[in-house]
Length: 278
Image (cartoon, rainbow, N blue to C red; front, side, top):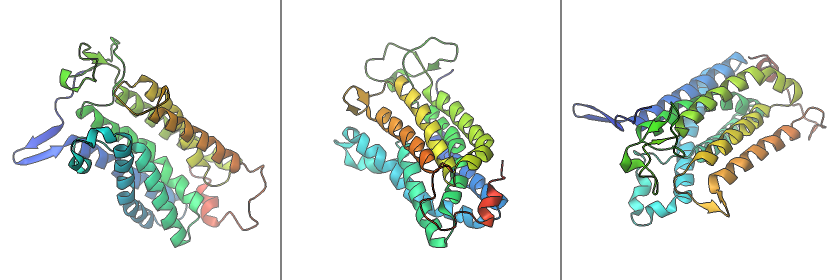
């Protein structure tokens, strides 16, 4: 796999960062998927899209905050770099956490069934991640240990991690995660009906956390760039494992065989129709 041809596209006086292009494409796909699912269940797709747009600033802050906190050493000598996102530095963990929190608040204010709306919103996230990961390719980042496999990624020497300057080809971790994210998207669509038959609303969020947590555990085991460690483990590896466990706990709590936490009505015409989607 050839090295990135460059991180930007120059069209005369117009300088376009390709990382940002792929992030924006991913966001657009996520909003469209959320609106489509909400509309198929009987909701207003425009309102769902508006909710996603309002959640974006919170997701962006969360994405950057997580990255800065976990890579604070990069910015110690030049704190102004904290505000430079043109070359990457947006954490998926922070983005998803911030975005979901904003959607919970918005859905609660609108009186929407929170679990059902989050289920609709979560399905498009792995597809958005799959698209956004190609921004890492153009920035020449997110790769793993040296390899000579046929699909190995050529990395320019200036972008190779410390201690790996002699290795020209590395595992394209960004590609692995992109393909696995597509798999998560397809799995969530295929499992939508069976999940809602066994679990209450919010179960698709739990399934996403289990699947994406597992994917990130695998990816973190391959990555070699410097990172904060907790004992012998990379911080993101620990966080990934916690995300997976959180998803398992959510599914256990939402199991229909468990008694309802409250006696209030948990279903509505909107929810029952959404259970039939996919």
